[in-house]
Length: 513
Image (cartoon, rainbow, N blue to C red; front, top):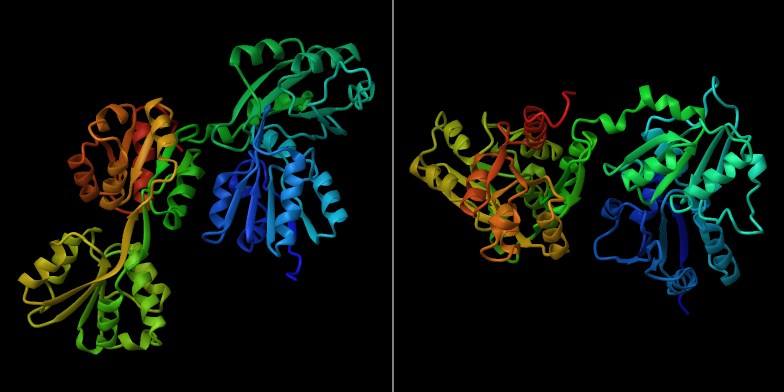
């Protein structure tokens, strides 16, 4: 009989994926199956192992993917299959998250479990809105209250008289009941001029904050058309937002950007843009995989002593070259007589990770610049190995051969199209919900274009700014029918990030940092 598995009830935090705890991230990384909620950031799933089972059980308003009883049964079922189950719950599992109920079911079923606390939105959302929930000049008490309970029901579990005397009140899930909450608080003696704030989608780039007083907040929220998920903060500390708000002042706050880079490589770009306040949607148009036929690469590695140079044109080329080198039982000592050249500092850094410095790093980050850098070398009769993507641009090997070198190109890796959720993505683009689409290589542009309905590129993309990492990618994008609005001068991820920031600062849509 297969042994029982284990369940981790993990607080996924309030929305910003950076607020996951270290232990929470570890639970995602070692899971066999992940069962996640509506409020758990999808970006957290990127920490999960490849090809594991991911089950969405989100509950949004009255739309329940699975009932609570169904979720409980699913946790028990998966654990009894001997699996490690990570249950991702928005915020903290024990703060109005029904984590206690799920733990009780696991206890009854005899399933081993652990609780991993998370950062609750009750604290994080106000902090990101510039509202400290406690402050010596304003309050000595803080009360967390469910806003989901009907304040008009006869047998309320809320002591309205008592909480009305609290310095700061935080209601979770209370937008629908806001008028009744205000009525109860005022009726119990809370002054009508008490400051109030509602924070929607706190800690994310969709964050929206509406302020007022108990007298005005209902009208203000109605005018702003604010909806759930939101938290409500009541108390004098709300007035500190006027000077303490910081998150919504980020230069790219609220800009929605599609990142088409391969998922495993997207993290640097996503982090840099997110740090500037952008909302990044990972929609990789390519997936980097091993070469379907590793034979040519293996043969090249077995005959490394015959080469004078290895030219690496990308981080992927470096990674896959050394992956095959090690798989064949060799190590970096096989390269002790070989010189290396790298396109770009990121590629050179990846080579350095394996203990090797590049002999040539051109001033600019494209194949043509490598050719220029080689002009100072005596290349006649030199043997050059180029491990790179299948169907890569021919400029580099052609020019090196023109210089008298003997060049062997081998496929180190291949890029495949990714079509996940493309219909949903196209709908968002059509509706004008996307501000920028980034292309970090010609292959990302080609594969994204292939996903669009034929003949509709201009119509679909008319409200979107296309941002390219460099002129080669931009040229490819334009040939495919995209209008390129941003092109990085420094052909790196930091360079692309800076180009996007410069674009919005020039158009006056953001403030300088």
